[in-house]
Image 1 (spheres, rainbow, N blue to C red):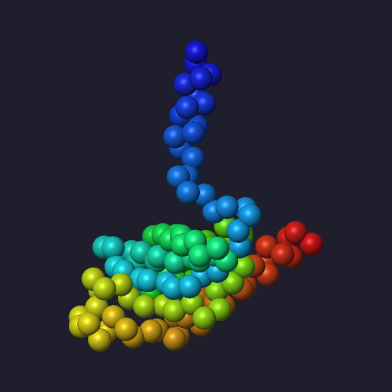
Image 2 (tube, rainbow, N blue to C red):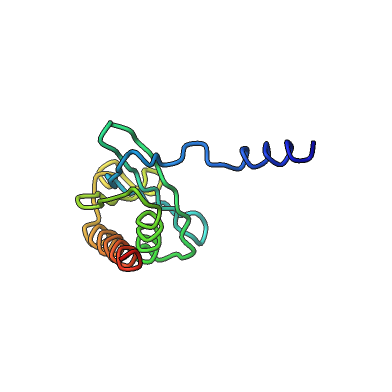
Length: 129
């Protein structure tokens, strides 16, 4: 009886919507928001079938640059995420002072996200090869 219980507990801990191994995902947008002394980074992924998936990373820093690097490494290390080019980085609505500020992209953070993403993919490929 104990085995059935532990099997159920294992299923309850499994992620609700794992990234499917049959789909390749790309990072489309990245949203930043402050959560106390940390920054929450939401990486919005899309796949070829039109699927959408949000990956949330809570970076252990107050610095946006470090938070973006942290999130990019986490997303690149997940597997099945092949690209982050043209990913737009912005602050979330709650962080914007005006409606116009919501539309402003942070090109420096976009470059940093892409660089960290690609560096992580290169490290993973080197370890596999």
